[in-house]
Image (cartoon, rainbow, N blue to C red):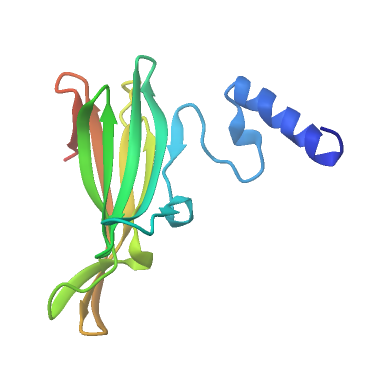
Length: 164
């Protein structure tokens, strides 16, 4: 490979090798902070109940590697499910963009954002979920509420728990 792109590719490889991908343009993940998937990261699945799907691998600690997967159904509901070594660590409702009753709630832009960072200094990555919940009646907005939830990884329980 030659040309302008190969230099950036080589630079990106070496930055990734040393855990410095935050120095690449447009990349904000670091070894102690990992961005979650967003709507454009989800893949369309035309057949079946799951309409959109995406997953990423995250190192929560030196000895704990987890898979964060988002599954969005054809009804417009979706979960962020985090697993490690075949165990469920947590499932969080993260995607909602359809009406369910006369008065209903959806997430602004369809999806809440999430990221991983060590929020309590214990050396384990935790989850932060942020976004806006919109309460609707028919097609009219009744209210908006900002959400910012933290889920801490509890190594004794082997799963995430909602922070108080």
